[in-house]
Image (cartoon, rainbow, N blue to C red; front, side):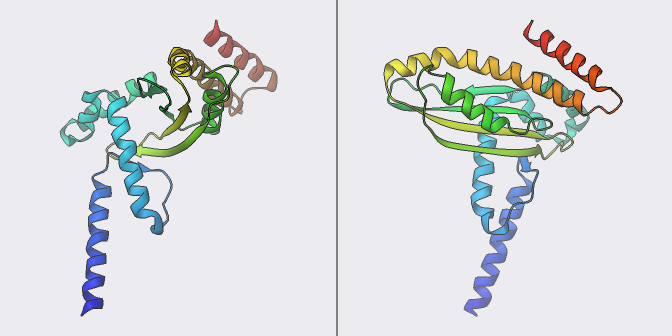
Amino acid sequence: MKLLNHTGSRLQKRRNASNGSRNRLIHPIYPLPPELEKISDAYIGSVESVLCQMLPAAFVSSLSKKANFHLLPGYFEHLDQELPLASWSHPDKGPCSVVINLLCQSDLTHGLGRYFSDLASRWLLPGKFLAIWNSQALNFRFTTYPRNSYFFTQISIHVESDEDLQMVKENLPRITQELTLNLHSVKLARSVIATKRLTQAEKKALVKENVVSLFG
């Protein structure tokens, strides 16, 4: 009887977890190993919480209203035009941690997580490497409108003093702007290179033209 009860309890937990997953705002693109279900579900929930703070309230609300499904393509088209989006925490004094979040489309952006971490560590405080004590990322789709795929990454940086914190705060807008420009240029370059109907010379010229237009 205990074994049956225990099994029933496990089945119920799985059903509850499954129901929770169905109610999620987002779901991972790639399958997750069963042994990590609890951990991954908690992590997905934490990513959702950050996304709800980063995205417009009206957009988040529309995702849970099936009656507005016909409006979703327009909402997502507008979202994609606004990406990438960045946000960060605002601690008052050091020593402290600054948490930086980044959301972008997942297509043609592989390697972004490493670049993002390296850029923040090296250049948020020029002349000094900042320690990144936590880094996590997720490729996902929105459950209500799974046609588009997105990439979320978050890093936590240790800042040692009030003076360092002030410099980090001053540099964050510039660094995120640089990241945005570089991300757009990389996506354009990869998109052009993947186009088979152009010659190599045409691809190089088009990449150069697009990059100049971004930084001009």
